[in-house]
Image (cartoon, rainbow, N blue to C red):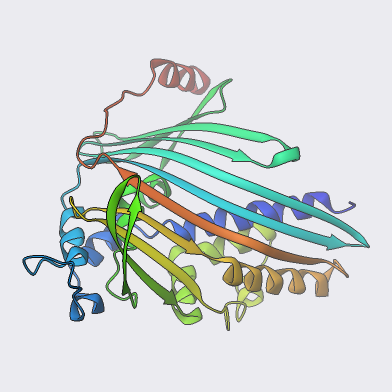
Length: 313
């Protein structure tokens, strides 16, 4: 395919943007959501709720005091590109295993991107708060280490606590949907459908649209209007019946991302790539959390700091 580099850039931009959008907002936004007004699910308590305890409200309160946890996020994304009579298909599964500690802040993430016949890429990431209030991230592909100073907002995508808390959102129109078993334990299930307008606000506030633009060389005027009529996004959330911690969420972003990507590729085709089209047949994301306030601690490998220090000298 002649314009493989352009396609690759578009593919990577889509992966990064959906990660930022789906993983929630900054640390400050999470704290704000945790103390905001009560959700509509409080108005309709099920018979299974005992002693007038609302699982949704209690889960929000519990998340405010989380000091550590483990999380696993899985994103499945299929993409079909067409140009000049040629078609290329990408099918990826991105798995991220995260361990998060809040005081002092340090986290670890093992990320694997499985692209089938296109290969697999694995990355290990560590991050920690420095004494001067900055944050350092260490990253390796198994051969060498790199480090950089990053803002706290950037680390949100690897913050299992922040990601889960984002979906305990009072503004989401959750409805009770019975109970199901998650990892062998009973859990209350809540479902909601977010509208295109709500998704548009999330894309704008998360910076995902800016990521698309900068990755593809598109300015703000080109991106304007691309988020209109995005469709809806189903969301499911599960809260453990015994501990009253949120243990899983699932979102289906297929229609949202298909519309957004189609709008962007149409704009690109008008300018330079006649016949270029892109479809997103599948875009789903799920996350499970466990070991609340009981995650196994870790230390950043000495070679990570040694290798990066040597590279900087």
